[in-house]
Image (cartoon, rainbow, N blue to C red):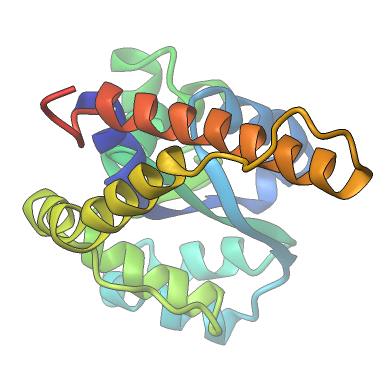
Length: 219
């Protein structure tokens, strides 16, 4: 079940390419895709200081807050919704520590160490928790609908109760069907026979994948 689990249980996270490296956005996007992420949404925009203050409201009151909002509104940014198995932690590990100086010393291979130039201009942003990701994605993509993630057990129960029985019954009945006159060469019957054999091949492929992923047993 490991392979199918990784396909089913993905996390979404928000990534921001900040103004200091927005000119390298294509290069960074290639790194993101190579790491196994899907880019579900992407937009380039210029935030106002007020929008930056709202986005970073949790940092309000800290000494660097005015500099942060001024920097983030100083030029265009690229925001992306990324999706991957364990996406939040994986993206955070890729970009490295918030502090550029710490990233350079302890995580020299991280993206912040590579593209950042200071603790303020640290190149990239990544959501740190699931709830933060939901809030940030909705902020940058207001029309996004984020469905609640189902647990592995809930998904397996739904598949075994509602999906597998229907597939099993339908494919079994399909395999039982045979053309009445397989050797008759009229055009209509040839097409019908061809469709029958095509569907049988598809049925076998579906069966093999269900068995491979452990969704069917006893075969």
